[in-house]
Each structure stands twice: as C-alpha cells, then as structure tokens.
Amino acid sequence: MHIIPLILAGGGGTRLWPLSRGHYPKQFLSVVPGSTLLQGTLQRVAEGAQAIVGLQRPMVVCHEDHRFLVGEQARVVGHPFASILLEPSGRNTAPALTTAALQCAADGADPLLLMMPSDHLVQDPVAFRRAVAAGIELAAAGVVVTFGVVPGAPETGYGYIQLGAALAEGGVPVHQIAAFREKPALAVAQEYLASGDYRWNAGIFLLKTSVWLELVGRYRPDILVACQRAFTAGSRDGEFFRPSKAAYAECPSDSIDYAVMERLVRDEPQRTAVVSLDAGWSDVGSWSSLWEVLEKTAAGNVVRGDVCAVECSNNLIFAESRLVATLGCENLIIVETADAVMVAPRERAQEIKTIVEQLTASGRPEPAVHREVHRPWGTYEGVDSGERFQVKRIKVKPGASLSLQMHHHRAEHWIVVKGTARVTRGDEVFLLSENQSTYIPLGAQHRLENPGAIPLEIIEVQSGAYLGEDDIVRFEDKYQRS
Image (tube, rainbow, N blue to C red):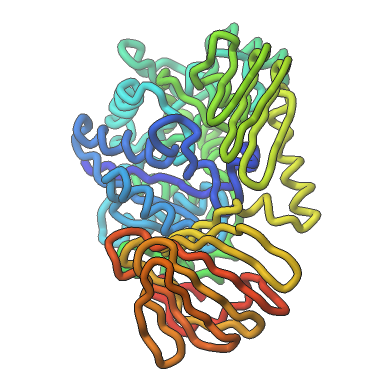
C-alpha cells in the first residue's frame, strides 16, 4: 500500500525569536548542526523509503510566501518532493490535512497519509521508522494512528495522550487512546510521568485518506465543504497546487485533535491507536527545549558562533554576526543576530513570544524579517540607510532574475562586485562585469539577471523621497508574484 508523507511546513516559530522570523520560521533554520529542521525531516522520509515498503516521495504543505524556500532547501539536500500544496493563509492542521487528502483522492487513490510537522527534531531516525512500521497495519485497516512520545520529564508545555487498552506490547508498544489531555500544571504532569500511562502528543498521524475524509465530514462538515470549494476552484502550476484564496479564507481554523480526534476517542475508541515513540524527539518549541537537546560544554553551556564565556554555566549563547562575550552568567538565553540581541532567563523561554507581540504592536520589522531577506531569486541585505538614501547588498543565484519592474519614488545605482549582471533598462539590454556600474533613473523599467554560473553580487544605492519595498510595479515576473 502506498504511504505518502505529508510534511506540514507552516508556522511562525515566534518562541525562537530572534533567530526565527515570520518570513523565515524555525523549520528553515539550522538550529542543530548539519541541516535545517525541514531538511532533517526530508532526510528521515528519504531514509524511510529504503526501509518501509510503499513509502513515497513527500507532499509538502506550506504558505505561498515560503514555496521557494521549501524548494531550495529540498534541492540542497537532494531529496525532492512529489508536490507542494500552497496555503494562501494558515488555517491550522485540520484544513491542511483535509485539502491534502482531497488532492490525494482526486485520482481515485486511497493512500495512507503519514502527517508530520517539518520543524521537529528526531535524534534516532531508526527508532522513528520502527514506530511508523508498527502503525501501518492498523492504519490500513481503518484505524487512526497517532504517535505519543515517551515522556522523559514532567513537561508542562505539551499536551498528553492517555493510554487505553494494549494492542501490542512486544517491540514497539501500541495502545488504544483513552483520552487527550490539555497541557497540565506541573503537579499533574508529575503524576502523568509517575503513572507511565501517558505520552506527549507529538502531532504525528498515520491514516487512510478515505478515513480522514469520512471523519472530518462527520465531525466538521463545515471544514470539509470549505476545503472542497477551495480545492475545486484551485489551480495547478507545475509542482505547486494553489487552493482558491477566497474559498480557503472562509474555512474554519481548527486542529486535528479538536476537530476530529477527541470526538472519535469519545465515540469509537476502537478506531484509534497511539504508537509509543522513543526516538529522541523534541518539538524545539522554545530556547530551553533546544538547550536540553544540544551538546553542552563541561560547564553546561550550549554555544554557537563567536562566543567568549567566562565563569558561565548552563546558558544557551548563540552569536550569529559578531563576538558575544559573557561573564558570570547562569541559566540565561542569549541570542545575537545582525539586527537584534535577546537576553532572557532560561526558565522564562516560553514567554519570549510576548516580546514578538510587543514589537509587532509597535510596527517594527524585526518580528517578520531578518536583515538579510530571502527572495526566490536570492537575497538582499540592508547595509546602511538615512534620509532619502538606502544601501543594499543584493545576491542573485545563477540563472535567476528579478522581475521587470519600475519605481515611482526612487532611482538606483548598481555596482557589480562579483559575477556578471545582465541589465535591462528601458529598451537597452547590456552586461556588466565586476567593478562596473550603471544608473536606473526614477520611473525606468528595469530588470537585473544573473546569466552566469556563479552567484552575482551587487551593491545597490537607492535615493529618493520614498524607499519602501512596496514601491514596486511589476510587469513580468518568472516567480508569478503580484
């Protein structure tokens, strides 16, 4: 039987700010050495295809704004996906799974869907594959299988699954689900841990496409109808599928647990199962959880980048763009990026999202973007700015191009510092090599392209009355941006 991994790559990851931003959330970050969280998920799926019969290439669900980040990260690690479902807006996990199931069922197939978030860390992929294999036969028989992490501490930041009757004890334990429990107080979490009858809810599911469509139609027909409308009115663009933006926006937002699972456990517990997962799992949901799973120094510090820590213990210190020096610090989170420094007690890591909320309310850009901003064609980074001028460093990938565009309020000077640029300016098309420059007058149609085999880097000096990114009129764009 075919098994399609369904990787959910949405979400903002505000609790890992300032490393994670709205336009560059945690699934795209290398918070562990070697790969990003998304790339680690793709790697687990690719390795699983060699060990689990029927496991196919994955489908990815992500926001429209992140489609090229997903594609680029998959290309870098050489693990392609079958398709990308582009959510025009985040509506939580139940609509995402429903729309993906409709796409899988469109050709009459009924595969198993292995739904997993893209931003989790699994340190033992072999144990993860064993857990998945333990749930396949049940899922093929129509049971909704979820995966419960064997708890290692009385964690108050996770929901819990209460174990019911045992379905398999040898090898990987499998139980019916007795109940879902909300995030508990510490005393209750300690009771859960001591009893041995509870698992952390990892938000990973394995079930037949037809079973999910049946259940969401029974318990949340409003979600199913809205997703059907969005899917029917959607459009395909190569590997991308776009549900109707207007129809999808009308879909209620709800999670799989609330929309279906809690009700199914109440009505038909025999159609549910939880596979115990003991694979070094973490949702990397906060800086403190990251401190717990990463390698530490003898003093208990997790250190990355240019850090000098003197008489410090049990800290997480990340330096991204400059030296960070600390003296006598204990139990702190210190994260430095090119445009922000965040310091907080480790025990208050779950509250960091309140910083993001306050900055957002103040209209600041730091919650949404880094100083280096990713675009389908490459990146740009702000270098300097002042009254009526702005300086950027622009990097264009080989073969990529910016849109044919014009500006109402600014002129631009371009200086090539690496590679070769093909410049369109009005009716002219010409090449620029390193150390050459050109001028783009206000109101002139223009395009920047990289025709070469190495990255193109230019310094752009903007001048004018208004320098915002929304002063762009696009005439042609190979990436179909509005």
